[in-house]
Length: 322
Image (cartoon, rainbow, N blue to C red; front, top):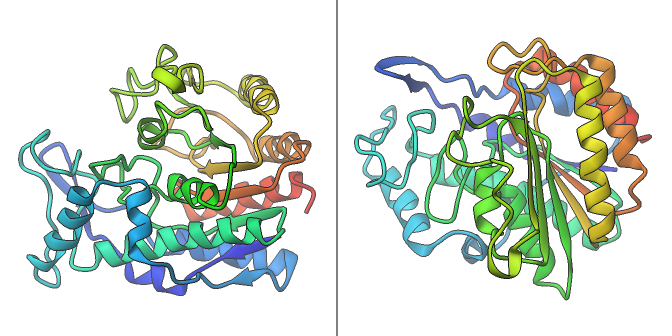
């Protein structure tokens, strides 16, 4: 196993987010990744590798030139401590008030993406399991917009990078509490990438407009997008049964690689979400995934409580039989 980590993520430190009309402290702090990196390094030893550099043109594998240029140019209009929030939704290229654009947002999001690209390159070199310490997260970023604290879609970029190296099929299994709406949009008409997301019901959870069961893909991608929206308050037993169904879909697709956008925010002690998974449930999740004989890239997504992250990641990787 290898863990891709870039220490420059600590310079991504958003200050605020808008909760309705109230400005509150932004919850995405560097400590959440530092905790994960330290626990894995302590437990498994010399497994940390740095991110590699890539041409910025790789961003266009996934995102429109208009969006990439908008994000890059927006930061140049800001002062050092200034943060930009959209004033009119549907007009701007930022879809909510939890995703501020600051002076260095473009560069920090690009560093996060390079971690996942590095993870993909390690799979091509023969690694069977790679974990990308990507921060900021990415699975809510769509082709033409940022949102949900996501700017560039790390998992989608990794998938496209893998595919540029040949006739490659990929499954993306999103295990964050919130639906991977950006990833779904990117591959919605693609039959070479199977996208599956297990998440809180979007009828009352972010992103609200995407992640429903009836969204199954279109055109060539019809049948290659699967959503499992779950009720509030579910326990680990229910989650594991749904995960079993998802893994059967992955097996049936028979991909060359498996990418797992992963969040610890399904834990019972995460006060912002409504699932009730316990520490040992993550060991079971890892164990079930380990039976898939497919090279795997795990990309960090949500989970903003460092204490929860420590327990979840420790159990998850133990279950993966590292």
